[in-house]
Image 1: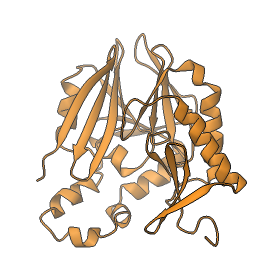
Image 2: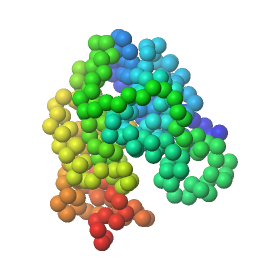
Image 3: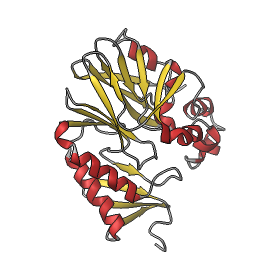
Length: 270
């Protein structure tokens, strides 16, 4: 099996970024500890080593919260017993727990699955059952003991996408809603740009309550200036003034530092 690696980095008191790296992925989970329990934001693809990485940082009981229901954020849920997901992502979670769907997202995978990487990729694209699931809605709070984390619903990347705010330490954990590279609105479960625009407006309205953004992928942390760029990029799409670029069969709206990936037939007739 290819080498897998979990790197942990302290980013604030009682708070760690856990970076998951493999030959096919890079992702970030975050562990937040209070005095009574710990909160694990996302579980990546969930390779062997995730649970031991978490246990090396805390012996508190761990609650998992998913920023959304995509396979690269829910894959390690089964290592834990208490798991929370936004109610609007039940369908997305079901799709991304099904290898027939997740494999369709990776062009050329049918060939790769015949190679020595087959067992590894099968593991990557499979979400084993396990754990007890609960479903939150907007504003759900998690009291960790001396530390409260709030869920903020930010649909766009998926209907149930959320960010998590720790007001006391002024940290925002954004999943795939806000990343340095861009946001994907191209899959069938994604929301229209108008919905994503509303989510960016909501985050901009509360930006004074956090200082840094900790995303689900790529560089971390990122600055709050990305919020305005995403809002402006989404507004240009909605207004019909966006600058589009194509990469192969994929289409993106480009604005400043970010790209917004859209369905292949967007804009209509392009």
